[in-house]
Image 1 (tube, helix red, strand yellow):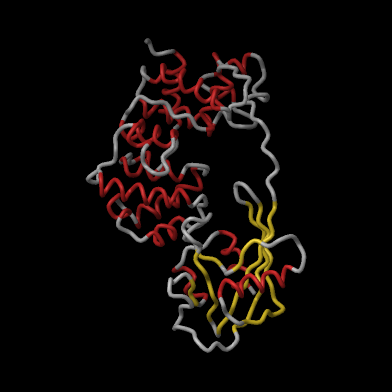
Image 2 (spheres, rainbow, N blue to C red):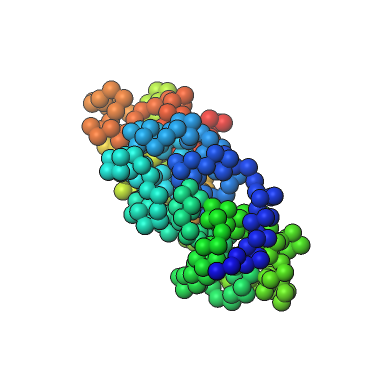
Length: 358
């Protein structure tokens, strides 16, 4: 199959306009893998400082695999979607233990690793190893919904498969790494969700949406249902200059991260009483609630969280084993200066920030 003219124009545009990125400037397979995991649901500008910090701490796959997961979470803190970090750590361990430390160089084997879906496996296989397989992410779907004039919901599997199949024929004529990155770069810089920069687009001449003046109508994306808001309560229990934090179970959302003891409450009735009873049950400690409290709001991908954290004072206890309140080490008494030693979720960090300012 001859290379279509639009592919030549696209890759030429990419060579002249591609942004400098640390994993692009030094495309080691490990760096590509790290970047693609981080880029899931996250923009390049946000990822770059996290990537640099992560690579400094874990310069290679062996270091990552042999590091404590708490250290991995701390490097990931604030980036969100923490299941990515957990799966990446698991996958790194599998590659070290079962693959002699060699990252798989093809889509099929990469796809078998924890956390590598079709998109990430295709990105690593094509960009790091030159496998001729297209990457289909949000940018790619948007670009080709407009380019080919696709008037169906791009989130459906049938549309994703349709675009994948058409691109699979085209990518065979090109250098996979440049082809895939060029499309994603075009979607990020030019073929934007709103107000696309059509005069700057190398695909303009053959773009169906541009010819029909319907770029603002495409792509078609079915509206998501409104995400719910949940009410949470927590207790900041002080013991001298230390306060209590608890670690979430690994099988929970945000598993492995630390927070103030608490949880989701039922309705809006007597939140303070609900919070006290819940934390008393969780910790098996005796404490009193003080007047101060901290309210924050935080939005996750599937729900909004309204958290009230109450300032509390520990009462004299007959038995407190050092700085740990349970044998499984899921609770710690720490000072504000020790906060940087533990990975926290965003909502808890917001409360800590309020405590520091107050």
